[in-house]
Length: 199
Image (cartoon, rainbow, N blue to C red):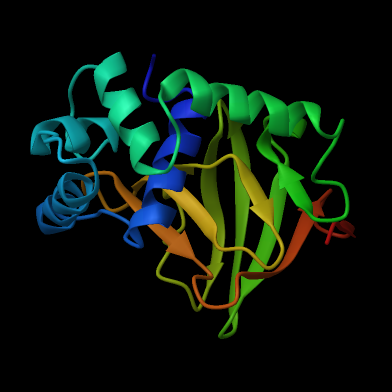
């Protein structure tokens, strides 16, 4: 499966949540390898994780054995059972994010989302399509205007997990906004003068 597929992005986010780290350096990936080994007693190569997280360029498709191992690391029997769990979550509600946030699949390219988080952080993102966003405004945040990233949803009270964040010509990294307390607000911006508070 392609590493940019929504299921793969969700898997990376779930692995990060389980491990308690958001890999952005080789040392982070080495730590993740050690955590997987300690729990599963199976070894996963550094280069495999770096390619899967987009830290280095490489094959776009991920081997099933890798997906099985990562799914097992977060508590599932294998990759297929993880996918079935995702399908069950999706079937559980026709729109599980109403009143809670914004799901990327509900957006059209060009729409903008404003988010805030503590302390005094604010950003506006423009949706580019294919789960990719561009930072168009950034106040008191390390995110730079013009940076791009992938994400699947914006939820109030939850951190914003960004995948393949690219800024200033640096290698893509994973990044978390609002790690302490989550997003304070999520707003769909219609234009300069009007905005709809989603959550």
